[in-house]
Structure formats: C-alpha cells, structure tokens
Image 1 (tube, rainbow, N blue to C red):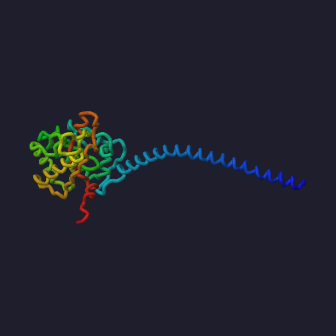
Image 2: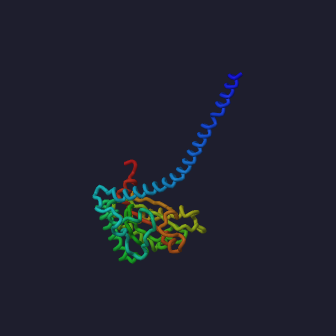
Image 3: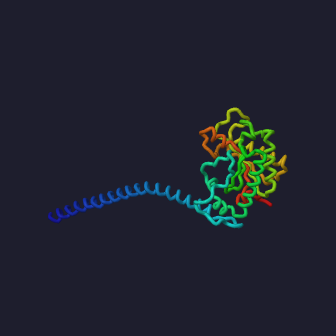
Length: 276
C-alpha cells in the first residue's frame, strides 16, 4: 500500500511540473513579441531616415563626381555661383527639383568644361539676339543638367485651349530655330500647361493639348526652318512638370510654357537611333 501511495504521489508531482516551464516559455514568447513589435516601429522610422540620407548622398555624388570625359570641374561644394539663367525680368527661378539647383561648378562637373562652355556661348548668342529683337521679355534661357533651355510663354505662341501657333509668333520660333541649326545636339520640345482642367477645347485634357503644341512647334522647325527631323523630340507633360505654384495666377502663367531644350551629350546618347 505504501508503494502505491508513494507512486501516486510521484505521478501527481510529475503531472504538475510542466506548468512552470510552460508559463516561463509563454512569458518569454510574449516578451519577444513585444520587443519585435517595438523594434519594428523604430526600424520603420530609421529606414525612412536612412533612405532619405542615402538618396541625398547619391544625388550629391551624381552632381559632384561624374564629370564628362572632356574635362571635369574643379569644384563640387555647396558654395558656388548661382544657376546659369538669363537675367531677363520674365525668367523666374523654378521651384525645387534637382535640375534647377546646380551651381556653375556643379554643372561643369556634370557636363564637362568643354560642353558647358559651348552651351554658355550659345546661350550668350541667343540672349543677345532676343534682346536685339525685343523678345527678352517673353523668352528666357537657362542651363541645367539637361542642357540649354529656351523657355517661351504659351501666351505669345497660342490662344487659350488651342495648339495652333499664332501667325505673329512664328517669326519668333523661326528666329530661335535658326540659332539652333548650328548645333548637332538633339532638340527636345516640351509642352507644359497649368493645372486648370480644359472646358472648351478640341482636346480632352492638358496631356493632349501640351503634346499637340509641342508637335506643332516641331512641325514648324521642320517645315519652315529645314531642321533635321531625326534631331527633334516632341514631349507633352500637361500640368505635371510645374515650375511655379499653380495656386496663384502668376504661377499658372509661368507654368504655361514651351521649353526648347538643346540636350547635353549625356542625354544625347539616349536619343541615338537603335539601328544605324
């Protein structure tokens, strides 16, 4: 009897002994889940911060460390000359975006000394001609990473909602095209609008309107200026590439524009024919 009682007592103790490690295990798992949850919250913030810092670092590296083979600039820092823009009253500085914040040293590092000098010379010739023709109030020029940008306000080229070039404005575009015929670079014609939806027009959206305007400028370059068609690109951005705040009338006026861009050799290479 005593053996049976002793055996029963031992079985009872063995049956309850598992509760202690089990409860410890559950407590440990709960602590692990709490820690993992807390860490995941912190990591999300850290990941975002690291991503921003990495993007900023890569952007600075692209500006300062990738000079063209024809000669890189001597400077890459944050303190340099202002962006290369014409000083005409109509030329407002675009807001934001990496294409519009280069200093002269950064542009030289990216484009190369030879190409930057070539674009500066062409810019000077165009600025002089625009001033002589009295067009410097409606046309402006600047140099960014893409190349030389000639910016024309849509108001002098098109009626509202129309893609047909005004007859009195054709001479302005022909004058610009004649200056560009001396360069072998690809020319990109960009159409831009403000963000006001189209209400009375043959075009259902600003996409179609901006593209049609760019195409008509290209047609003018080809038809009346004998510009090589294989050197021209027409692009319509609608309202999605603003250079000013669309919430103000002045900003919307600045956003309604045609940009004629003499592409740098870096972008030139992207436009080369796939089959030669």
